[in-house]
Image 1 (cartoon, one colour):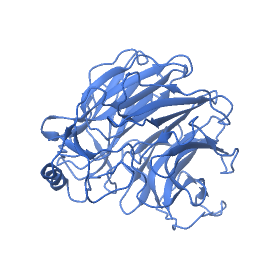
Image 2 (cartoon, helix red, strand yellow; image 1 turned 90 degrees about the horizontal axis):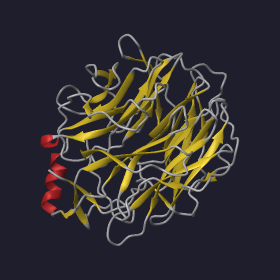
Image 3 (cartoon, one colour; image 1 turned 45 degrees about the vertical axis):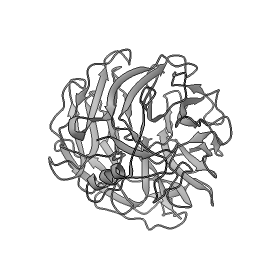
Image 4 (cartoon, one colour; image 1 turned 30 degrees about the vertical axis):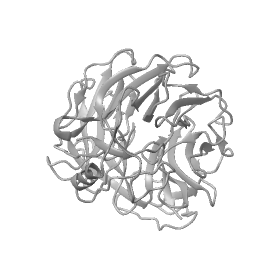
Length: 449
């Protein structure tokens, strides 16, 4: 069965006004669970054990969303977010914060032309800070086109600590306007920029009937909602301008000149879940890993990984990480997270609601460069459909952050010998992003107003 999605370029947050905060966890080796009440600009005393510091990032009375965060070598962090204007207009901003939460800069707009950007909750901007403190931001630019849904992917580079950005370089090389999204960004130890994304340049869409739409909605598992989006960014109960959307394709490109130009786009896979985010990882041994959710026969949707042993020049055949038996005739907006440890063992984390076991957040490991994977391990049943964050810290091990139910976010350390979650923390928030800087965990997320 094909998927149905309303003709739209972006999904704005469903709430009229939101704000972004980031969570500074002062104590990492914690047990038990802590909650933070949902209040404006919470500041928890730093001297109290097991308590985090919450700092507001986005301005008041602004419709903000889609946060991302990256740590720098000096322990500071860069937070990006999107401010939505009326209609389809949006801007990507970035701000630099010290390790104690104090701002080190004013917010800076990344997109060179005002209101040029577009984003939605499943497809936020990306940010990476390299070892020399160069800041890279990946973002999506909208294209006005009466013929098709269309946007372009860009990477903007700052070499002065995020205070200014060079001319943005376009990544996708197709000559005609088309859809590109769900991108992921990484930079390897040699400064090579790596980007993966979903692409529909060669895919044809057909008009969907109301019967097809109803059938799709009924096929979703209990507790899931298939999003319909109108092209003005607002959710509508009445569907208009619907079309069937075929499965997407995964593309890859890289830059060897610091983001001035990007290589010819390379297709890695077809029949890909069209709104599940990609992931790309640059390992310290020069391997590159790309992940996506593959659509298999009869609409089974499983996490796939392709690996490159030569820095992204070529890729080995795709490997399915786990047979979860998740059969769903719709896109769950749920990608995977990738990380490697000091021995370059690859770990993958993802959500599934398949019949193989209970719905939840799972992980699996590869010790042979992504050729094979261990049986999956359950991280938590307290997870909802979404893309988790997986980080590795040489001192504390793996850190996982994920979305739960009822607007809760969870963070946990993974016990190395068993893979079980320990030191679980819980806060109120939506759509998290996370990084480790200076040995501390920072999480950016949305709070509702």
